[in-house]
Image: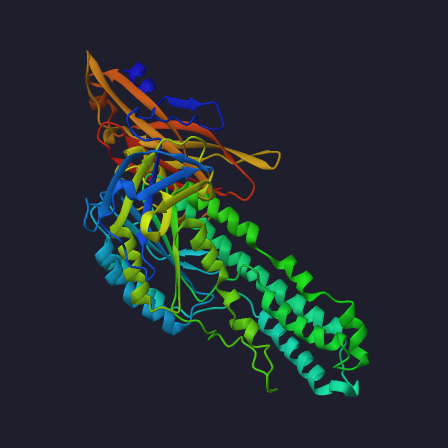
Length: 541
């Protein structure tokens, strides 16, 4: 009896800080790389019934043969892939009317797009991510979340931006009214300082928005067909570029003496467009594109309004004054366009939400799957060149690997658990942790995962019973940033009557988890390998 009790409650200690990744060997018959290809004409209509011979694929400039080809969706075979769709409402840029229109269109979109095995999640973005739903296929849950969302007001990220705009307006108005009289109260340096203040605030806001969008990528795994839809009012890749362009116009006139000698010397020494390069987020957008590519995430933007309704735009009284233009210029949406380009998605700017969602649904329903044997590593989208005869437009992403495996699904849900919280705990697991121990900038936490023995499925094995369970662990934070998932499988071999004698005892899996700086959450998932039942829990330390 004592021997059995010790066996049942024994700790399974794991010495390494990080689990070893266990990956199944690839099938020799399957192509090493799968691509999903959307083909459209100049009006965005999907082109069906193309053949393998219509496509040419090159990797790193070297043509490769197509090893596998199929048409999926409209006019072809069913898509079959599991799909994960995240809809993020950017509450810092959306007007109330645009928010309502998108919410009204979203139900119809999900009713059309979601199929058995598909899941969607609705999030609200601002200074951080707010989960409106977990992963769900229940449209009633989505509708409830959208109803709650519609009651929320849109909140700009910061008010200093408006103050900076006001300052620019005052200075610009004074300069223009002063003209040749040299009575201006401001120097050209004062105008440049105001432009820098505006650009700094706009940069910080855009960087925060991009960080929130980027954190959602961790919710996906490459084994599913992944869609990220941001419903917002704009995102600039080069915040402040418009205002520096405006200041450059004033500088040109001032440097020629048109605005008087008082401003001329300061204007000649200034370089507004040179300074605008200091507020360029392009490297961060490129980083997002690479992360999204690796996880097979396609980005779509739904931006039905192209005007700024937040009241932050500047309106000048002087005829021909173009200061207001920097708030509403095309640069306000170039971030959306770049994210879409990096991931082979689309930024729908100025289209109705209904039309945008219809076109996204069409992308999910009509595409081609191409399998190739790479001649070189496909490091990113830029390494690929996929062309189609007849001059059609092509958008290509990493294809999903079919329906995925239970382990792939667990990885996705463990990552999501850091942000969305657990929606299932059939195994009834509980997670406890000892106080963290500092290890340089990192912290090490001893975590106990407790699993009720009666919840595990054991099968006859010789003279006893056998089973197995796999523990999945990821660290993260409440904003949604997550580590990769580590996993380890433990086998069980017990006497035949072990389950009957275990009663309500728990099995404890102990592991040391490393928390990198900024990480404060530990998400744990356990899957019974025999029954496929799952359990999830998380804790903050």
